[in-house]
Amino acid sequence: MQTGFLLLLFPLRFVVKGSLAGGAIYVAYDQGLLGNGSQGAEALKKARAALPPAIQEWTNYTGKTFPFIPLPPYDNILSFSIQATVSALSVAPTKVREYTQDGWKYMKDLIK
Image 1: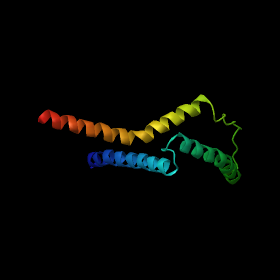
Image 2: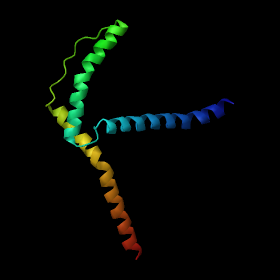
Image 3: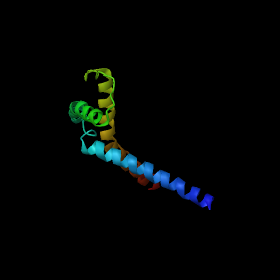
Image 4: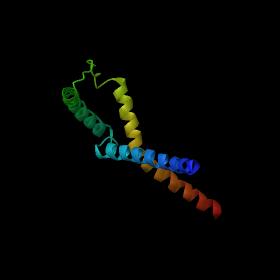
C-alpha cells in the first residue's frame, strides 16, 4: 500500500509545482512585469512603494520586528539586468513561434 502512495505522490508533486510556477507567471504577466522594460520599471516602483507599509502592518500585527534594510537605488546595474531579463522573457514567445515556423518551413522544403 505504501508503494502505491509513493507512486501517486510523485505526479502530485509535479502538478503542484507546475501550478505554482504557472500562477507566478500569470501574476507577473498580470502586473506588467513581462512587458517591455518601462512596464517592468513601473511595476517595480509600485512594489517599492507598497512594500514598506505592508511590512509595517505585518510587524504591528505579529509584534515581531525586522532590522532596517535600506533599499538599493533603482538605477544600479542589478536593476538593468532585471530589466534585460524581463524584456528577454517577454520576447521569448514571439521568438519561439518564429523559430518553430522556420523549422517547419525547413522541414517542408527538405521533404520536397
